[in-house]
Image (cartoon, rainbow, N blue to C red; front, side, top):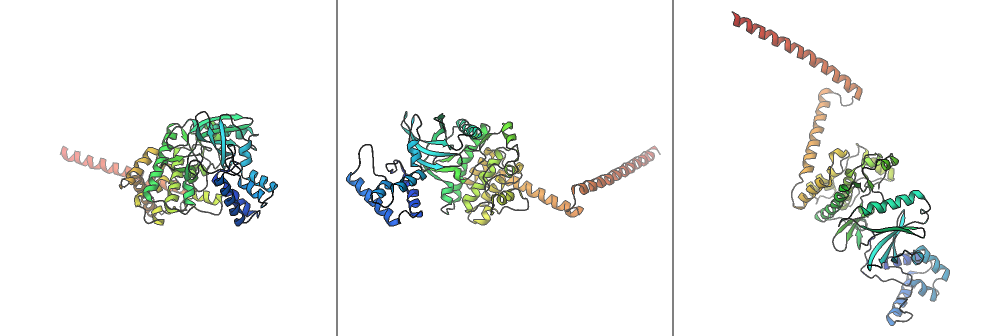
Length: 440
């Protein structure tokens, strides 16, 4: 699950801070006015000089901490050093102990846990360890949810999914271990204002669709497919991460416990998740993947808004039309536009029914061919829309309520009955005349 743009063996100081965390530390020092950028750079240069000469190092201390160097230079105080170290997670790294794992550095923090880079000592491999926040470890519901995430992750084993390795509880620390993945997320790229080339985006989405297919075959839905949870690995592979909101499709008890709750991320959430429906299935993930693809190739989210509620309402409001992605980025093929519109159909019955159906169309696009399923669905929808429009014009019932339409339908049925009876009588009369002529 962990992501990092670092190469193997990133520089770490004596407190175990990775290069990424040190950059955050430097920003924190400057932002809080503890030191100027020039003072920070001077201390870094001095530390590098010490490391090059071998001064102040031994087998147990690979290099001086930037904070220690700044304290020695009287740029910051010892108390400021301790406070900064605690805020940047290095104290947590030093105090956390999980049998069988050597904690290396803090990688990130989420709403439920902190993720660390660690070494699994028994097999000498780098892993990612997610630890439940101490503030939540006292709550049975959060512990249950955390353990459930680990168990769900253990059900999956696929090249396009961040795989689970281990889970447990030690000294009140609830944790589970995942494979360590080096790379950036789609969100990281979008944050740099990157717009993905169509073919590149399609290859990424194919990989995620394969991951969803695997989950679907095991009765699971992810429920939080979004750019932040798709990792673009350094080796060119793609991994779907974070199963914190995933659940078994058939788990009715769990579903009923969440009825009416909007579970998901506003920019990418499906309409049925917004409504808090019980029977959410794989088509919700297909919708979210469509919203992710939309963002990748246009640089814009499908629906914007000033608040999460405003954004979520647009996902369900039939009066708010989705601007086709190929209208925003005119370099895109119309086929891709058709596929995205099918993935993001508000009525899930008009979406791809399974990841297999989606994969068929995605591979058609990659081969330079028009989609097979999306075209049929859009044609059917257009025909239905035209039919509805002509009925409204002929019947003049465009603004009629359901009861008025029912009343009109009853009147039409009555007229049709009278016409049918008259037709039958005329038919009998004609037959009688023919028989009489033959008798003569």
